[in-house]
Image (tube, rainbow, N blue to C red; front, side, top):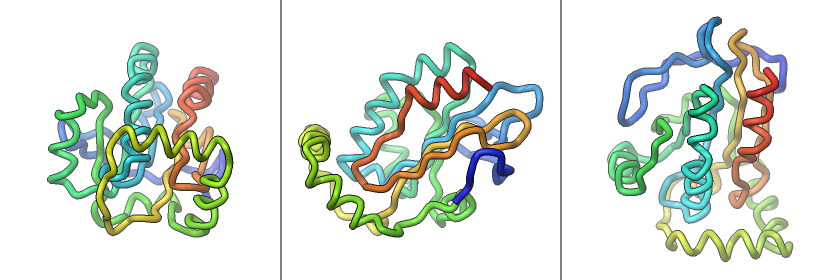
Length: 181
């Protein structure tokens, strides 16, 4: 797993709508936030996307680029983004290269998910996620998410790997870290 202080894997993000974005940010730019989410067909991901959408203006106002990276099929992403009025750039990682570069995987996903769902908070999270629809099966069923803050020096400032498919990005923590950079 990547840790704070490690060099961030670099790539050019190509959002489903919008212009290419260099990752990590150029030396003169503000810190950047990456949110790796599961497939957009998942109700847990839809709940996470609603959270991101609700807080996107805070990141935008402070000048911190926030990118959402998913393994969703490009056709589904092109349909999902406008239908759900997603303002954050959504990048599709169909072949999983970005997930591998940032060392995301499925290790212990089912164990972590069962532990989470058996807790009171997990049941609440599941109930809330169901409000966003039942979703549909997909190949990356147990793919976990993660969140990163990348400094303009190309180093990771914060790395948080999910332990359950029910986890969501800690947007308050990501914004606080980006502000502190």
